[in-house]
Amino acid sequence: MNSLNQLHDALPGWVSDLKKKKQRLHILANAQTPSGVPGRSYNLIIELVGNNRIAISEDPINTKLPRCCMERHINEDASFCLHLDSSRPILNPETASLWWNSVGSYLNHQDYASKWRKWPIRAQLSHGGAADIQVHMEKLTEPLGWTDELLTSIFRGVGWLAGPLPRLSKDKLRLANVRSPCPRDCRAKHYPFQKYACTQDDCGDECRKQHRSILRIDCPQRSTVEYLVQLEYLRRRKEKKIIEYLRQKGIKCCGTMDNCPLSKDLSSRD
Image (tube, rainbow, N blue to C red; front, side, top):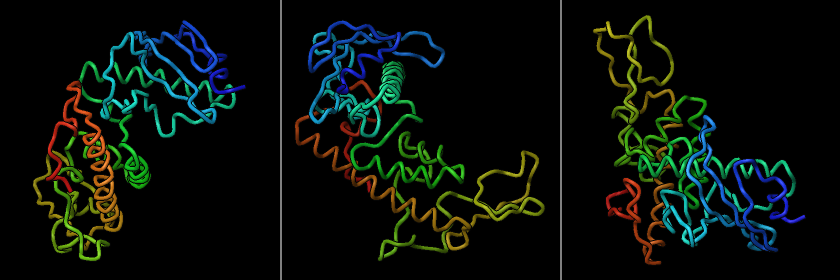
């Protein structure tokens, strides 16, 4: 049974089967909010695209979305980027169910983006090869509780990994100026609140004692901070290549999202 048949047999209740052909399935789908309230309806096409892989896109005859928008995870060929390698073959009912769940979430995110002109930050993913780097960065930050800082920096432009990055040493392996404050603005707490960990928390509203900045050389998470900065340099370079490629193809900002890289001059970014 090919991927298309697997998906057809697993149609969820929020999807109507409009027409099925050998290589293509036309459906009407409602975005599913977390509360279960139906969102907007979308006319979609699911196709077999080779080696039992699948592609999903909006029916060009009845559209609500831009044809291409990197910020809305719509590829240059109008197919949807649901998640990493979302076109992989569907081999059993379990993976078919998971794939449909990802479609429901994706459409819900599109409704969110239409309203707020932003993609939900916890669902946001960098583009092309930059996505793998972001996933690696999230694995580094999760045990430290820094994931929200990471995502806010990357996708909202606010935080210690946003804007100009700390300068690296000549060998690109360490941060330069190790006697400067930690780029996370970590501060040492006074007794009895001292602990050997990076923290940006104050002791409390009533505290009036000065919390001195931790120097980069003294940061207890120095290796992780330096590695994250290195990875962010690399992630930005890969993102920039994607943007340059789209511009060379003549693809322009659709104007539906705030802070779209296609509408900006990236020459100042690292």
